[in-house]
Image 1 (cartoon, protein in one colour):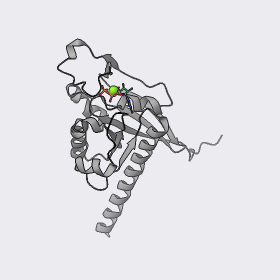
Image 2 (tube, protein in one colour):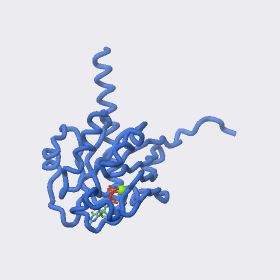
Image 3 (cartoon, helix red, strand yellow):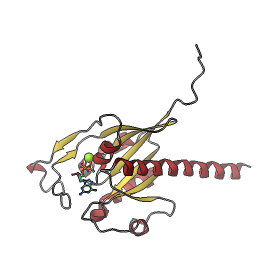
Image 4 (cartoon, helix red, strand yellow):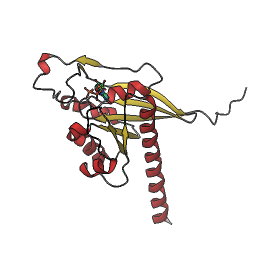
Length: 199
Ligand SMILES: Nc1nc2c(ncn2[C@@H]2O[C@H](COP(=O)(O)OP(=O)(O)OP(=O)(O)O)[C@@H](O)[C@H]2O)c(=O)[nH]1
Ligand SMILES: [Mg+2]
């Protein structure tokens, strides 16, 4: 029997799907996952009135209270394990645990409520975790360009901003591929910089 490790054993990578309340995190994980996604949805109840801001997402009836989990094989070399964060402020305590060991993050944004994603952007900048912005284009949202959104979020130039519809699997996949390319690009640049200073 050949005991050599196969060269095509896929490399597992942990990715976070983050962003504010109701931007489409659960929808993204669900639409791209090749396994039945784990969801921890609870009904938005009357008790949450005044606590959870549902303006802009009035038709939303549930919210994530712990996490989403899904998996997607991007190539024979790469499997992404997706962890969706809860969107509401009262679940912030979960983030450090979910971010542990992650290689990068997608921050989803909704142009009708762009400020919702500020805390997530701040969080990943502070943590030094590579991230990209996925702009979930809701049907009734205004069409901004990626550049306009990058300016509004005051992003550094190298951070990709990609427009998407998280309900579409191909669109969600493109977001994840963009993140993986961004992570690889950053690591390559870091290595080159380290080699330049050491040599
Ligand atoms: N019209 C429209 N609706 C969308 C689109 N994307 C998502 N939705 C809907 O918007 C809502 C987004 O909900 P979720 O995916 O639960 O969002 P979330 O970010 O996981 O929310 P929390 O976990 O509560 O923070 C759902 O009702 C979706 O069906 C879109 O592109 N267009
Ligand atoms: Mg959710």
